[in-house]
Length: 58
Image (cartoon, rainbow, N blue to C red; front, side):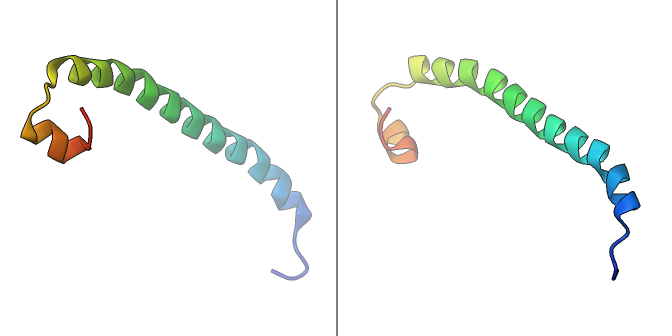
């Protein structure tokens, strides 16, 4: 703990970068999958009580 072992910190850089890359790829995949679903939902949803109560505006 104290004093910190800085040699060990060098081993953590690669896993930290990998974690950020996984988060970015996951976010891009979610956007890629959500956009077509969003537009499909928009095209099929008419102004009904279900749409207006669930999403505010449809």
